[in-house]
Length: 74
Image 1 (tube, rainbow, N blue to C red):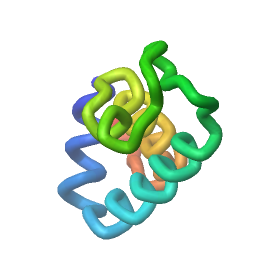
Image 2: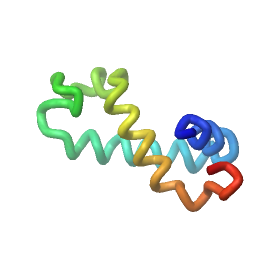
Image 3: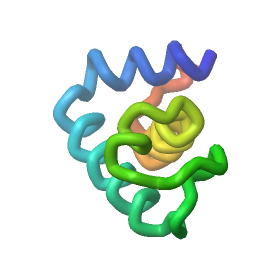
């Protein structure tokens, strides 16, 4: 279900998805302390490859673009 929303937003609203995801990534990265949400050291390379962090970024991006989702896609 969640992956369907992500795919829909990526395909139908690619520009908005990319710009919002970059903003969310930067905000969450800046809000983290020295450690990532998974417990490892939060470096730029780690954050770009961390599944937990990227899942958090995707979830927040979907939340911010929720008005783009129609009842049909939910």
